[in-house]
Image (cartoon, rainbow, N blue to C red):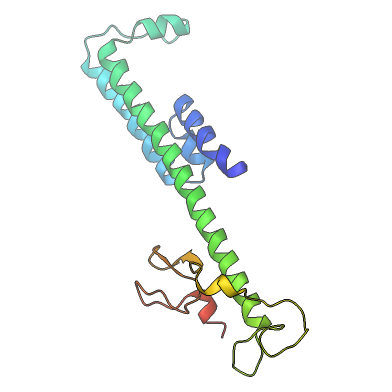
Length: 180
């Protein structure tokens, strides 16, 4: 649940203070770039406009009334782009974490399947063919027709078969292949 809330919170923070959403995500370099870009753009646009100087001692309503739409619109667009960028960065991080969790689960599953196999090299697990009454079979009869388990390759990011020890796309060994 926490991962799902990071994206909207980052976008909301980036809307109120340019760069704060990225700083919330731990992307401090990106936060500084967005903050400097938006503030620098505001200063440059305001100095190029024909507006009267703003009295900083006035109220916020007086300051907002002194900013022309020629300055406010581009700055609003930049702030919106910063918020969208913070949202997309957070979503990307959440997707990356989910892929890592899925890969870790596949590694654990592959390791437990390897432990349940006999040491004679036949690959028949406990309770499999030849062990009469030893318990339930580890594979049912329809498992050969089922779609193989798919995981994402940590090297190239493409979907590959979890039963292989290498990615058939990039030919890199999968993490559980190194443990054999």
